[in-house]
Length: 246
Image (cartoon, rainbow, N blue to C red; front, top):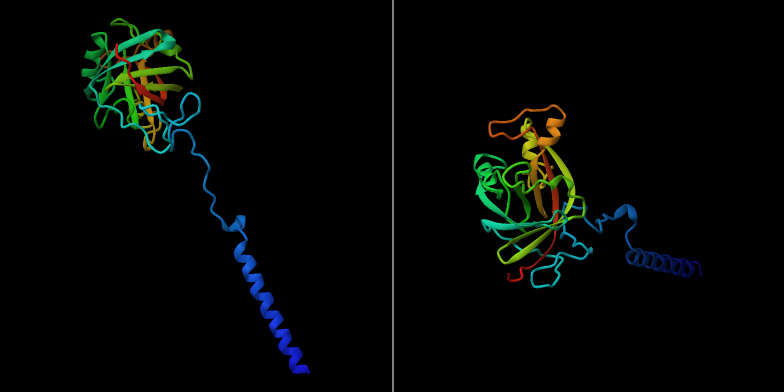
């Protein structure tokens, strides 16, 4: 009698243990044992650039693809329009060098804007990295005369390679040409953040702060006549579309 009861007790304990193990396997991991992944990435770090309406980056074909972006273009001659400033189809000439060096200054002196390319410059329109565009504010037709008035959310349209790349202004960066690190920051792959790898397409529109410097009694200039400070407007690519003929 005792032997039968003891055997029954062992069977019941074993069954209970098996049931507990099965239930534990069916339950989700506890918060302490789970590695949560962020549901979204902070702006400028990863993921496709949002469009002006918050949708994924639109490809030239009109479709939207959250997992890929246009390759962009390395066209040497592009056009720049800023609707908020009334600027339309400004000629932008690419050259190998850095922002506001001698070749870039010569291009600007002829009334065009300049965009440096290469290891110390930037990328082409729509490409991941920093498209740097410089233009005069007080001389040579003054194409960037009103650039400081550009506001967050304003659009910058860059045409090249049969496409229009639409960037939206996100912030303003002040650059000191007397500080090499500050000067380099405007050409960084992520503008203003040297050393950070770019995962988005950015644009930096840079022009002199001569009126502001002179008003403050600062008449310093480098060998090319650049004042100490530059005003840079930083934008992020939000949309790409085919360029209409004409």
